[in-house]
Length: 77
View 1 (cartoon, rainbow, N blue to C red):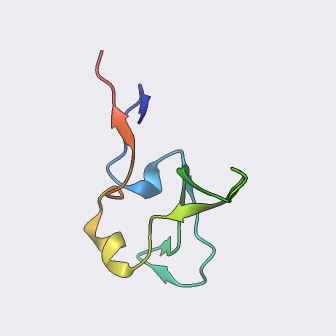
View 2: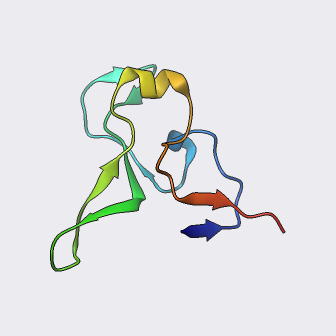
């Protein structure tokens, strides 16, 4: 679990760890296929080969919520 002391965004697109998708398809101005730097995909040697896709479909965009597997939690002091 990763804990950061920051204002957590309500949607992945506003998160500083969000990587813009490379899809040519836009929905509501958001490029589908965006990825999360906090959710790396690693090979058998432990090297990062990709990142978990967090924006897959139009419903993910219109729902306006963070990815369900997001490990970031807002820390209150």
